[in-house]
Image: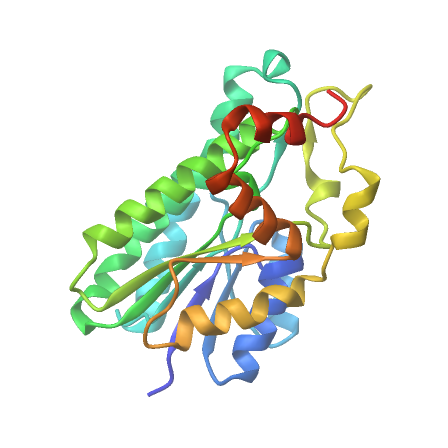
Length: 258
């Protein structure tokens, strides 16, 4: 039987390359996007598409109901990939901006997953995978809101994994470092006069979004998927430093010129 996978955030970057790759591998892919124009573009490319805005509770409810109908209540994989960033010093961010950051990167993911679990649990198999970030393990000045939402996603995913133990569902996190996508251009900056940008050296270690594909395939298809999949040398290195360096030493590295 063909396995169905839902992927959120398919308009570009990681979601787009994942949708293409999994379709080539024989999966039935349900691709979601926030903007109607992107939904139409993916439909024209032959994908089954749905509109989904994780910041909108009604949109999540509607998309989940459609997915249940389209799949006949049988779903194998959920790739929670969609998200965005709010950048700027914490002192410049309003409560609403912080709420919006968490709504897209955590609350919407929680809501969608909860609504789709009934299409996964009865079948005793399935994979739930989150696109986190190295910012879910370490944080840097100006990225506090984004990092906080990814730290929360990491804790949420760890808890979900333990709560689903014995059900046949496996839960994994993909933790990219610098990836060449449109993410940076879509970031909301709290200070237009002093935007938060990546240091120049980051470009030397940036990989294309296709770099996540071997990790995603392993998470979906291996009998014993890993709990975490760092992607890029930067992510692997920082995850090690997080474990071994004292906090003050790590702060000195991550502060950079701040």
